[in-house]
Image (cartoon, rainbow, N blue to C red):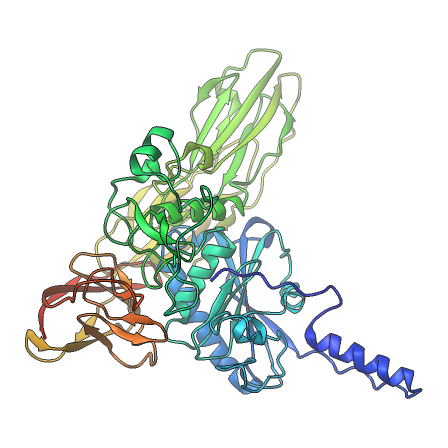
Length: 595
């Protein structure tokens, strides 16, 4: 759900209450007591890949977690962040992110109006509450946060600003809920809560809209009224019109959807059942558990890349001599390399992070040197939004460059945790003006190549990767062992009425798909994360949605949606993704459901 809660500049609800009480006491001539100190907070680095000014900083705040419940908060943070890294494009661009957890000792446990409007109000630092902050005109699942308080606690993370960070506030609750707007919120302990976060980040970071065909659950949305939506993933146009006008998601039409099915035109969205269309039958912005489809994934890739400098360092722009090495420092996605193109007066030069102008045969005078960094990702098809950055220098042959060196290594892929079997690992050397240092890579003790990065493509198992430059050697453990998944199902291939499935993976996040549809994250059961998932012909109605549906429309559908019962034979595939990004082996089982 997309929502932005606005609070007056005078501060949080607690601060306003304090100010009102002080004013009353002073009017009565009574001295006001000293203001109670705010709850203490601690900043913990969950993942740091670079300086805050050169990264997109995800700041996770906890509300309603007492001192004794801080371990619970960190467990919730780990689950939410691990889920992000298993979903694209977060998985490919996790190296663009720093993640910080701000743990705040709450005076009371829980959040306001949980689960009902008559539930007690809790004394918590961020004043989080369901029902849009205890508003009877709102809906239960809308979990809001005091914006001013959230900003104040996020400011505790050094180097972060509203421009380079995204706040995610987790409320200590097992009730389903969240919101997306200026900040994203989610309940920390609900079975589905780790899937709420990426959906809400789709709103907050991507500017994506809900694809629901309802606003209040169990209440069908009406007909869409209005003109062509501003939303990039909603339209009134037909497929033929999109192609003819080069409009909306015309570049993706006909492609197999990352969330299952085919990119096309499906009716319903923006809380309306009819009169407006979306790209996929189901995607993350419609149904939690599925991936972003290509349209949403392209927007999220664009927005993530826009939060970091694609050229993160190197030789400053300006006038330089022709007697030197010139450097750029591109960002380093986990899954691929960025392209770097050098041109001198329009003539292409060979080189990647650096070019040696002494080998470029520069004629006397002044010239223009450019380095263009482009992200070649297949996630983006619109050239207007492809991540690109350029740095320009004036090369003057009359300028003499003083010699400069630098440390052997200034940055690298972190060595503190294993890397995946298909990651791109990098090393950034110093930037000497007279030479380009060589980086030598060794894989399991054997020479693997040279260059500032190395694209892994190794067999399953554990490996050792090293990079040596200037007498310094860095070592990584390569974890290419895909996590195993076990499935617990009732005995026999034939079941009557319903059947259950429990997936387990000791070091990965399980997911499954039915009859070749989109991969869906396994979360247990909405009412109990420890309970198995239940499949029925039309799904089980829980809080206004039908889960475990084997009929048309996907695993989670609105109960009012018309669909045929899913009796008959079904093929269920399952696998897991681990923290290093490895995808484990896929297994499958065939079951038959009878009335």
